[in-house]
Each structure stands twice: as structure tokens, then as C-alpha cells.
Image (cartoon, rainbow, N blue to C red):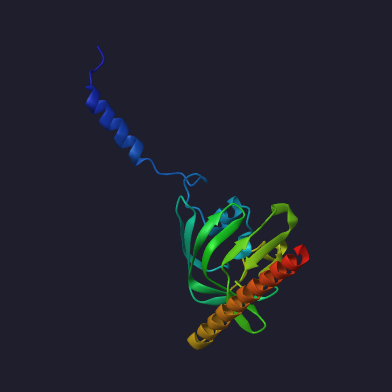
Length: 190
């Protein structure tokens, strides 16, 4: 007669062995990198530089990237990365972005959103508040080296102020343009 083992004992032993097995490093078990998440969302890996210390993303797409240091990377323009970058990622775009700035005409403008309208178009857009900057998708295929950024707090503060003023001027000009179009339309109707 074979030995009899009570059911709770069998379950305990089975569970103990299953928990003691080492985890495999297949793609399903390993921690995703920021580059994996960018790729899964139709965005190029080179949007973030090399030198990422930590990365995390939740179910809603809210993410945080921690870099070793404030640094800049050169594409068509210089892009500055703060040590902490946050935003929300979804297919083809990153919104609510904080911690990335793009240089235009010697001024640094905060990048608020990055998007790709049509993945096969080869074009990626940076919303810097004042305008949408258009870049070739191919510029961002490989994560760039990030150089030390030499920036004073005063420069960053002044550039943000200038960007805010330009954004307000743009909004005022758009409001005046819309008002002018309405006035012209009303005169044409009369």
C-alpha cells in the first residue's frame, strides 16, 4: 500500500517548491525599461538619453524617469533633461511632460507634450508652448549621450518667464486675430 499523505501536507509541499523556483529572465518577468515602454507606444527610444538611473510607469501611463544629472543632448536643437522627468504616456504621445526643455534662439522652452500623429509619417512634434517644433523621427532612433548641462537657476527661471510671456502674447494675438475675423465677417454679412 502506498504511503498516505494528507491533502493539506501535499498542498503545502507543492506550494513551497513552486515558490522556491528561481524566476526566469524572459521578457514577461523582467522589469520594463523606459525604452521598452516608448517602443510599445509607437515612440522612438531616443526621446530619453542614456544614463537613466530609475524608471517607473503605472497602469494609467503616468511615468517618472530619474537621471544621474541634469544634462543636454543635441538633435537639431539642444534638449535639456532635468534629473526628474515626469509625464503621461499613451500610444503616439507623451502629455503633461515636465523636466524636458528645448533650446530655440538661445532660450530654453519647456516641452509640454511630444506626439507622433502617424507613426509611418517620419515626423515627431514637440509642443513648447509657443509653437509645435517638428523633427524627423529618425533623429530619435537611438538614445543619445547626455552631456553635462552648465545652467544657472537664474537662466532657467528667466527662460521660463520669457516662454510664459511669449505664450501669453501668442494667445492675445490669436484673440485679436479671431476678433478681427469676426468683425470682417459681420461687415460682409451686412
